Structures are given as structure tokens and as C-alpha cells.
Image 1 (spheres, rainbow, N blue to C red):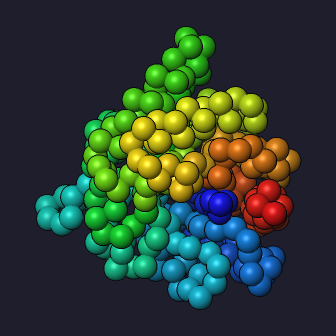
Image 2: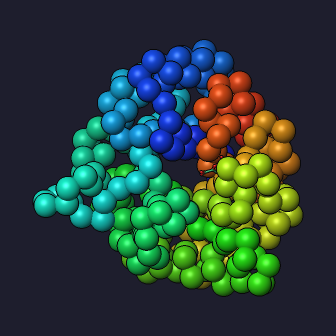
Image 3: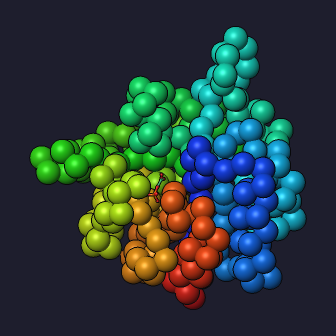
Length: 252
Ligand code: PEP
């Protein structure tokens, strides 16, 4: 059975003092052995700080992006070998904010996923439709196109990725996909993975988009929802811990 994964996406938030107190509160609230996987994807300048704090704890370290290149003249970029060197376990790729504000294409997102895997960093590949696309009945086509690019790029390693379905209209808006809406898309993604690998049942497909302490349990109870990518609620220890607890209950 797939373990649930609850991954916080801190986005461009935090400072040394608030990171330390948030993590201390989360660590204090965790059971000694947690029956789900937990990660925090932090701004790259804080990878070292957070890495030290989560070392030998149940929390895994994540980055919010990774370069498609290994090294060289790419000012400002951070490579997968560098992330690996800092014991980073996960890298989000293709977050809708990267697609929207940095013009990231499906092909580039696929290359980033491939680069991450080549260094032993697990890519969390984000897919999701805008409100216009949903209203035009294009949800399935959009997420399948986005996932197809990642599948194409990573080839036979497809069972090693994590996928996150994040409807753009639900991110940071307080609007959440209903459990049924989310499950329907997750089932489409699972079927697409199954056409690409005989190990599709292994792949964790997370839901992201205003998941919070109040709605997590219902979402996480769905057959193909294997966890959450959590933005705003990951910045508040009690909320993040409630989502982790919902994941534990859903795993029981
Ligand atoms: C995200 O940015 O990945 C996200 C899901 O944000 P929020 O939970 O704030 O909607």
C-alpha cells in the first residue's frame, strides 16, 4: 500500500527565526513514529538551516525548484547534484507559479524532473488546470498533456516520481476541489501512469490547493489521493500537524 506523503511548500516565506520556531513546533507535535511521510520544501537559502534541524527526524527536506542543468554558466540556478549534496530528498517541479511567472514549459518541467531523478532527488511534478480551462471542459486534456511531458522525459523511471494535482484555481484561494473532483482527476492521472509503467500503483499522487485542517480528512480518504502538497497551511504548525494526523488516520 502507498504511504501518504504530506509535503509543505513554504514558497517565498520565512526567515531564520520563524523557520526555527515553526519547525520546532512541528517536531514537538509529531508522534515518535509517524505512519506517513512528511516533507518541507523550503526556500533554497534555508536548505542548510532546515536540513540541520530535520536531520534524524521524520521530516524530509525538499526544494521548490531545480535546474534542468547539472552545472555551469546558469546564474541563479541550483542544480540537482547541489540539492543532493545538501541531502535534499524532494524537489517540486512545474509548480503553477513557476509556469506562470517564469514561463516554464511542459518540456522544461520534464527536463527538471529528469535531472532531479538522475541525482537521486525525487521530483514532485505539479500539474493542474486554470479556472478557464476547467470551465471549458479541458481539465483532463491539460493535466494529461502536462504529465505526458514528464513521463516522456523521465522514461523508464516514471514510477519514481511523485505527482501533485494542483488545480490552479484552488491554490492560495481558499477554494478547494471537492473530494470527488480531485479523485476524478487523480484517477485519470493514475490511468495515464498505468499506461506508462507497470508500477503505477507505487506512484504517490498528491492533491494541492487550499488543503487545510478542515478539509484534509475527506480529501485524503479518496482512493487515489496519496497525500497533500500544502502551501499556506504548512506555515502554521497546528494546521500542518492536523493535516499530518488526517493522513495518519487515512492510512490506518
Ligand atoms: C501550493 O502552492 O502548492 C499550494 C497548494 O498552496 P495552498 O495550499 O496555499 O493553496
